Length: 326
Image (cartoon, rainbow, N blue to C red):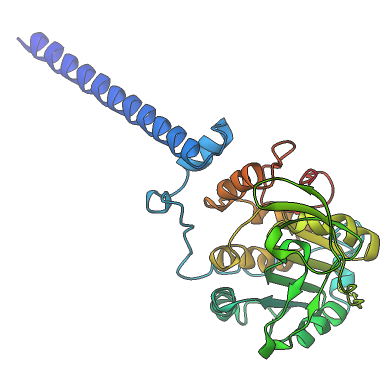
């Protein structure tokens, strides 16, 4: 009798295990199917990488909205680095600390981005005696940061390579404009002096930019995080020619600075505090990104017709992860 009862219990346990396994396999298959359908709806290739990225996102954000943390992540205490620890090929941490602290200037453009940066910086106040973070309010303060700070961040709009346009109350007048460079812009963004090279037929035209020349910049910071849409495609080659002494971090795709700023600004500050290389800081910025990267890659394919050589990362440093050609 006891043996029969034991066998019966064993059979029940086996059946429960099979049932649980079957349910789990069914749920996994269903989730994968839904991920593939969603990616197709967004006109994003249903690669294994994109499916895994979709499945890793919190369900409340799968309508395409990027989740924003309610509070920035806390920065851990500094991990001292050895003298001469390299920040990049060009700079060591001794260079960044030559004034006694690493000074970071951050400019957020537009009310949404401005507010996100302000909230994030409030949460980072006083985290390390080795880090000074300055919230830049005007065009002149931004120019001063490029000249005097160790690291400068810009979060806003690059206007399809037309450059930064500051609000009138923040100093007006543009920076980082191109002339005699090839740009891919909406027809509505053409200016007097532009010459059309080709028409994509979807509202986008490739032009040779005319108009006013760019204002010369006095760049002495060690790294510039130019985190506006598609700055890799528009600014990498030009920056390397004109400011080779300053490391440049760019964005490969269209994305929302106001939504992601609370996620990656602490990563930048934490990385500098822990003496991480610029390459490793950018790698941490690229971790656990929401759907911005998928939508951005889809826009590259559909709007810009740039379907080859698309990098898997949103943020880029160096030439190994090129954004491809226009």
